[in-house]
Picture: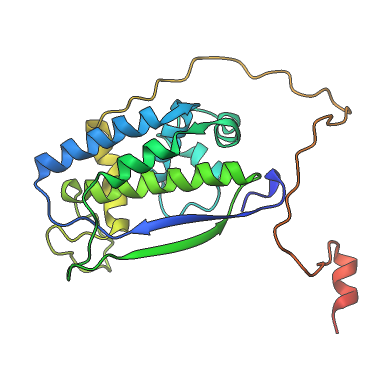
Length: 231
């Protein structure tokens, strides 16, 4: 939930099953090509959007808010750049869709396609939500491609995985170790100083747009109002 970005909206993130067994050399080449192709699909604010994908892959545990990704070491820019990229960046969706479609089709062990959809509350505008969705798809695609390359970094209470059968979570744990060997076309941020910001006491002349998120019941906003609705 990103409360400081206005009323949340729903966006879909797609998760797919892992690729069948692949030769490590071929897997490295596929992962490298995909990262280059992904960067080419980010036609505005591409450096920041690409770093957001890497931060998604290298963050420890679940991502509960986009701003948390700015604290990940692989994310070299500030939270202002993150919001600017999600609100104003451009993702060439037809081109990225073609890149993803050109990869081997992920299948389960018995040959069935396995797809799942997760619905999350995230961002200020529908356009930002769409950009976030495609970043998540790009991150999970890299998890699939990196499975033959990742080591099994399991917790003490987890059973060892069969060779080539790491779960997405275990592949993600080891992606930080793989990243230095993969191409990173995103440029380093330029050194700069923060702006002066809005003068103290002045009003915001450009309030953010608000979007209906489908709430039908008004909830109490203060402690006093909450006490009044209790039986």
